[in-house]
Each structure stands twice: as C-alpha cells, then as structure tokens.
Figure 1: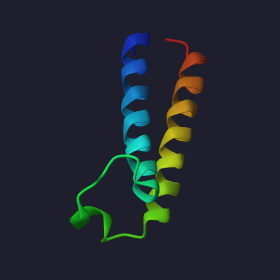
Figure 2: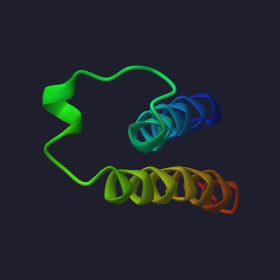
Figure 3: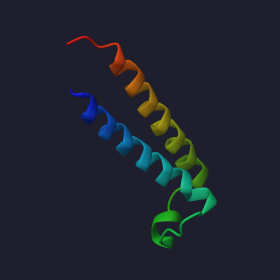
Figure 4: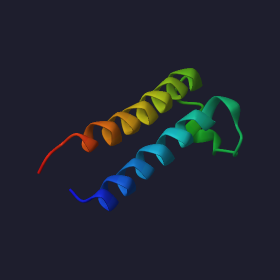
Length: 66
C-alpha cells in the first residue's frame, strides 16, 4: 500500500477515535438516542484504543518491505 493511502487510513482511525472520545465529554453535541444506549466511558476507552491502533498501523507499515 502506498504511503498516501496509509496516511488516509490513519486519518480515518483518528476521526473515529476522536468521535468516540467525544461521548463522555460532549465537546460536540451528539443526538440523545445514540449517546444514551451505551455507557459513555466504554465508548471513550474504545476511542483511545482505535487511536492507538492507528498509530501502531503507521508504525508497523514503516517496516514493511514490498
């Protein structure tokens, strides 16, 4: 995969992670029907894990030889 595609995929990881981190803090208002179904701190932890996975994806792709 080319470097530009890896960066775009990392940005997707980052956007989803930041969206999930937003749940407990309400930086941006989220509709009530989505935010009341699941415990917001579980969503927050998932967002952190997604962002860490994105960084790991970028780090691991540097060492892959094609």
